[in-house]
Amino acid sequence: MGRIVMKWGGGLISDKSSLCSAENERIQHLADCVKRLSEMGHDIVIVHGAGSFGHIRAREYRLDEGNINGLDQTEGINLVRSDMDQLHNLVIKSLHPLSVMSHRPRDFVINTGPDFQGNIERFLLPGIHITFGDVVDCDEPLDFGILSGDDLMLRLSTELPDVSHAIFAMGGTPGLMTSADSSGELIPLWNKNMPFSGHHSEDVDVTGGIFLKVNRADVISQYVEHVWLMDGEHTSRIIEIVEQGHTVGTRVVTA
Image 1: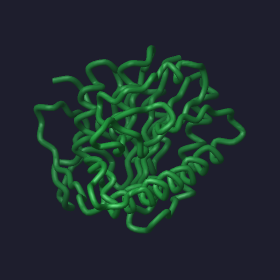
Image 2 (image 1 turned 180 degrees about the horizontal axis):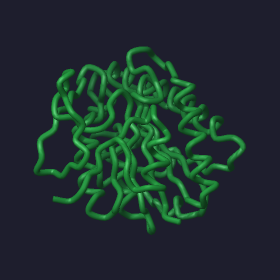
Image 3 (image 1 turned 45 degrees about the vertical axis):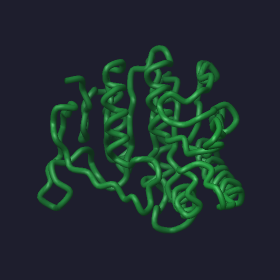
């Protein structure tokens, strides 16, 4: 069985407009899906987003900009890390009684972006692994920054062996759309030469939103056969991707 790397988007598992507001029912449905995939014999890596547990306070304290002279950001770092631990523990609890391996990026990552430094061999052990977007230490002069879950998706999907599927489970959209309004239609098959419509809420999101996600999915598609962006509220579609190779969603392919 191939290894599955799966992103639980922050906008899927939390209400991004309300501080530290978890979508517990969605989290449990995703966890039940992972349990089924595990029963099928797959090793699984879950990367969960931050949503309202990370982005709101990270924006308030400008943590994505690194160390800013004259601004005390220590409280913000501690608050975001504490909030992310709370969300992470909710995800772990939802997977009970499965045994899971937790990897907080602040414990093994230096720097941000796709070239972050960190030994991902810790994800090689068979079973269920969980990590997330986090505030990590950086080289001077930044000192700290926000590591996006989408960059973790990129590195884990392309560097771990035997990855058969990289699935971005999003909230509020069935996949990539031709338009952001009600006239938009789902794009079932997408490559980087094709247009799509997306909206990045810069007042909330500190890591690049849909455009970063699509960029990373495009790179992953050069290494992994099945790369999908889909509506994570419909977890049966994740099973369909793995069992049948198709579902309602956007499959990302190389140009």
